[in-house]
Image (tube, rainbow over all chains, first blue to last red; front, side, top):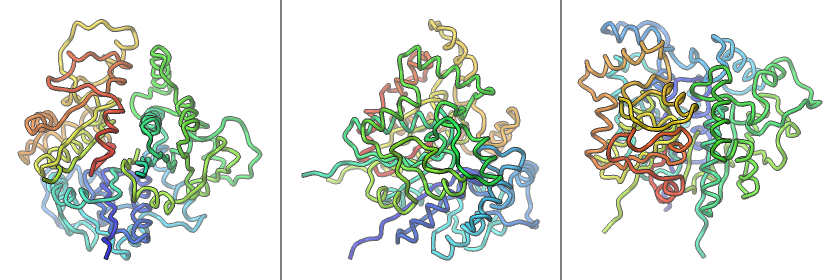
Length: 159
Length: 159
Length: 159
């Protein structure tokens, strides 16, 4: 019996295009029969936020962060040529035209393919995010768990 | 017989400085006798564009992208301190002063050293880029090809 | 006797938040008994600058760079939501509230844990930085030294 290869991606970025790249690689690796983990930290956590308001108690700064950060994958901006939101519209137009997958669809596909989606506990704590504000099926873990996966990983990327 | 070590770089960024870093590592690794691949995806593809106009049929959005994205390595901006194009001038001045290599020269050197330069087919397709708009000697491939290289790679980086 | 696992991080970015991520991973890996190296190149070198003025002879462009680039970890901006310096204040407020470590403290902890902090000689040379402008205990090395570490590395990241 040979062990499965593994792909471990740290998604630090909160950009729509970078998150797309992370999820395209993750879905590709899962189709390629890798065990795949995406560890969402810092701004990357925004990809996992659900839309809507949650009755979660937050302090002043936590409220500011909650307000200023995009609520979920569909609201994220681009790393380049964002043009106050016009860039993402163009990208989404292109995706539609080519019958390709949007970021929310890529995330859903990753969940169907059993890609392990992890939210960084330290970031959750610092930004005052609660599990009920995230998509269903997200695991919570810290840097030690990431390292335990990555130290035996085949493809380790920081995005 | 021992197998060659391999370095696999995903160049996602369209920034002059990040592309320089990618190509400096790639050229170093090639000199170090690694098999080296740079997989250019998203904005990283701009580093491989040729200057000039090509008689390629494009739709409206594809024309917009073609117009707004830098045509080739020499036209790319910086990730930091771009200052509307003044930053790149400073960097190029520094490079000249130190007799170091510009990005186009680093790309040429990589080709001489047999670094495999790959353009992501999905990005080509989405942005409406055709092979004749790219430098000579570029391979086209998708994420599966990248993973096949990277899963046995020694140094895997996302830039 | 088993060999130690190794983590090799290239810190290219000059952003406070990205440098924090690099140092959190590095400190985690060191606690996890990895041999850890952070190779600071391009803007990442700013994290190692000391505050204050040094009597170092610089040319015109070198002076411009020295002036425009942040002098040390505490002066760096954010990759997202920098808001002309307001973002970093919010982050530092959050760090304080949670009794977490600031970037300068994370760097100090890394040094205590024997994380090898390397400054890229080429960048030093190009930007006209001298060793006396950096924190104590920084090694100088080039891309070949990085590759010698990374080609046998377990966790290789470009940040």
